[in-house]
Image (tube, rainbow, N blue to C red; front, side):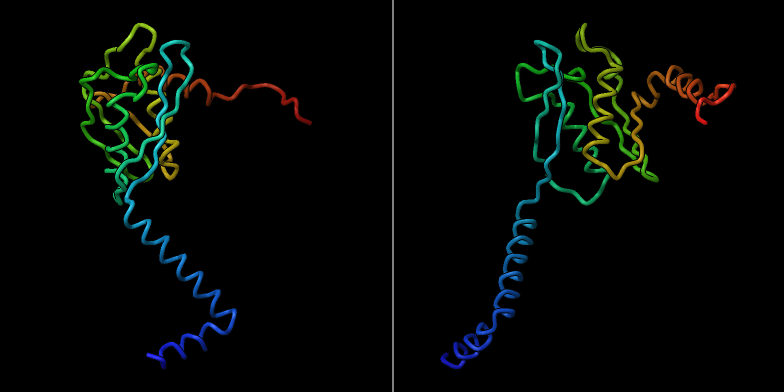
Length: 178
């Protein structure tokens, strides 16, 4: 026993070895904490019933290594609604996630048919979808684009495609930059 203590005393006599041991110990504690606490923090944005301002909630979801499963859990938690009574739901209570597919950095989320109907007179489906898409993009920054479908159909596809085609048309004329 005294031989082991002597070797430890010689090892820790050098400050560089002692500091390296402290760093290794902190790294081991951090890895243990990461493995034991298998949760990921996600942000959810809801609208206030009183004044219509956004309210952000932070929730901890079980960590998964599949991007599709993580997005599905995120959207499912979003569909459960806000924790606060002062916040409004984005979609009706019967809405569920049908499928989530991630290919080439593009996430395609398919919701059930109940998502097509507005929940309240003040909050329309277009605004709810925009909040959902913004939340997915904020919480999963590695995604290039998010597409949300309702019962396999892209909502407001005509108006969105017309807007993109009008923006892409270049104006003819002289440039003001010289």
